[in-house]
Image: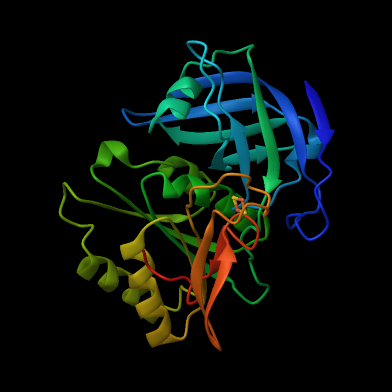
Amino acid sequence: MNTVALNVAPGMIPANERVFESECLVKSNIPVNNDYRLLVLDAPAEILDCTPGQFFHIQCPVRGGHQPYLRRPMSIYGYFPEKGELQFLYKIAGEGTAALAELVPGENLNVVGPLGQGFDIREDWDNLLLLARGVGLATLAPLALEAQRRGKKLTAICSARSPQLLMSIDYFRDLGADVMTVTDSEGTSDLAHLRTLIEQLIADQRVDAFYTCGSNRLLKLLQDIGAAHDIPGQIALEQQMACGLGMCQCCVRSFRAEGGIVHKRVCKEGPVFELQEAMGW
Ligand code: FES
């Protein structure tokens, strides 16, 4: 395992100010259902000083003599300094992730990170509501662990196309979260039903802050409910990236600010943003 600290120009340095490039050994790389795989890496302590919501930039391996030119940004599913493990949950979506799926234990994977600004759990937020769908649940998994570590009460509403595709349910339950599941196949994942569920939780005083990831329709729903009930929240955005370090500007998106619309780099100022400043896509 080979790890070097990257010399990133001042002003380009992500939140934790320590970015590393590391060759990590693959411990396992297994399917968790028909769509998603779990990759577990043997990782050095330096790169495991992470915040939930941060990401790593992964150099997908060479397969068939071809190496994808750009790294792939991948949110952290789990980081465990005590056992030296870094975990990613991913879906095969193209050439890079298809090559990733072929990695076997004992091979090396080059990663850069941890990168970006992660989630914030404010002291006065005692009751956290996590709402996500599909692989968005992977991004919220380390947040759930951190919330439990800080003694916060957690409710997780997990959405998927079908019950078989619900992910991280046991993980959230093991952390003491109250887990509610909604699926398309059962007809429970529509916005009207979600709104009813969430507004009941608010009426029961079980929501001080929202956390979500990746879904435009869930973002809009939470912005709407948050504005009506004065409840803050945060969202982790997904975005295509090139450098991942704040230099190339290819990940810039528009955000609401007091003076109007501003532009921010998802890799540097994000990927986590305040719920109400994020704009739909
Ligand atoms: Fe290069 Fe964000 S990916 S600035």
